[in-house]
Image (tube, rainbow, N blue to C red):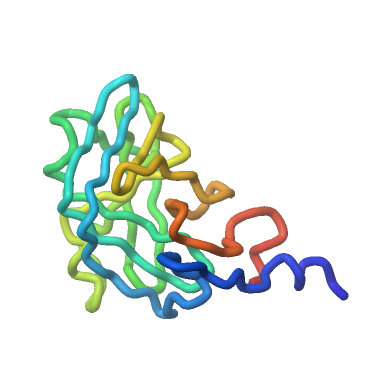
Length: 165
């Protein structure tokens, strides 16, 4: 059997867990009732419970935080743009010294309006991100910005060999 085929078999979620293979496509935006923190450059730059996350098949959730929740001056424009077929055109931001480590949708497409005035960060570029007090593990790869916690099981897209999933 093809080893790549074995690698992306759905892991059955245990009690209190969810599988990314049960997430929808197109993605869904949902409000979370969890405290999220982000630390970079030796300081806490976000501490908020005003959180939404985007759920998409095979991807760990991406957390979007209000721009107003970031410490003053920590977000700065960065080079680059990308396009999501669902959410629209993304623009990039630096978070302190972490250049291009965040993105936002200035004008989200219909269905994704909840993302307006919100910013997502690559957890691997931060010193620490937490959800509900648990330290997040960053999704592999440098394209997606998923946040992996103990209550989310994969396997997850993003690692080498997973682009074709």
